[in-house]
Each structure stands twice: as structure tokens, then as C-alpha cells.
Length: 85
Image (cartoon, rainbow, N blue to C red; front, side, top):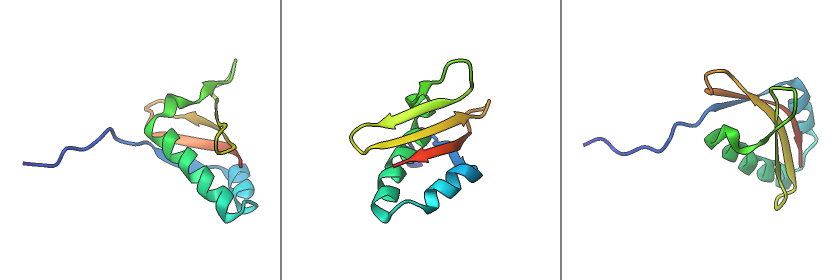
């Protein structure tokens, strides 16, 4: 019998502005951001839609993390445009 798997997560890709911001974060900030990225990959609809755009805004008040991203049409890839921790 094959093992039971949970829902498939989407692949997360960061564009240049997000990568530049990521380089400036401390190890602790990066760890907090990682948790947010995992949450987004598991549920791409977790963020709030930004009006009149395809963007979504995810803010985790507990960890103090914010991620601006959009999800591709097939919901298999999430592209991160902005990170803040």
C-alpha cells in the first residue's frame, strides 16, 4: 500500500527585488520568513488580494513578516516580489 500524502505544495520562486531584500536579513529574520513561505506554498490563497492587481499580501503579525506575491494560473508556482521581516 502506498503512503498517504498531503496536498501538493506549490513551488516558490523569488524575483530579484525579493532576493536583494533577503540578502539583508539576519538568520533569525530569515527563519521567520521561511515559516511564512511554507505557509504560502501550502495555501497560496492565504494572503489578502491587493485591489486591481494579481498580487496578494500576506502579513504574519506574530512573526512580523510580510510577503507580496502572486500565483501563476495553474497555481503550481508562487512568485514572491517583496519580503519584509
